[in-house]
Image (cartoon, rainbow, N blue to C red; front, side, top):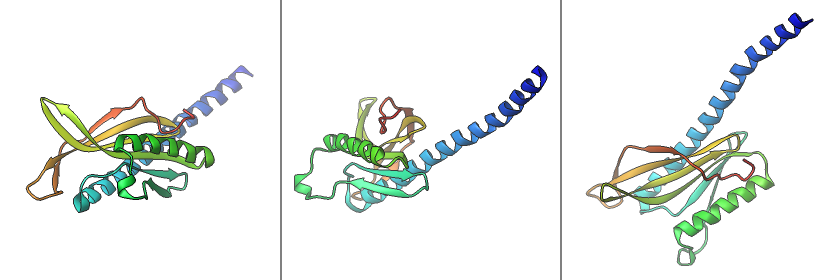
Amino acid sequence: MKKIISALLLFMCAYAGPAFADSAADVKQEMDALAGKVLTEALQHIQKGGPIYPFAFLMDSKQEVKIVGYTGEVSLRLPADEFAGTLIKLIRSKARENSSWKTAALAKMHTVQAEGQSITGVWILVDHVDAPAWVVFQPLIRDDKPNHYSLGKQVYAPSDESLFLSK
């Protein structure tokens, strides 16, 4: 009897490992894809009209994407960092209302100090309900033309901040 149970456990473990690995790979792929879509949208907007105002993409379990952002009068907008906080609350609210929203990414302009220089770029917080959040920062290097930039080397880092409360 012990041999049968041991054989069953070995069989189950052998198949659980790859299934878990595929699931983790799928989650990472979803996060990467959504971060890429957000970055593309941000860079297109910057090229057409200058700096972005914070916005977010939500992706559900069917890979459908919803854009969330400010739609009111430009003169009535909150400061960008304050609105980014509001967006995080909105994403959490939407996720509570609809459990199919599994992945989210929030983008905003961000400036970092490095080696005595200010470097402006696109900062993206990407999160999934089943994985830790991470941040990607895409530095923008000014070109001669207005709203045209060269792209610096992307920086990836884990994040302590989550877009979902249920983690």
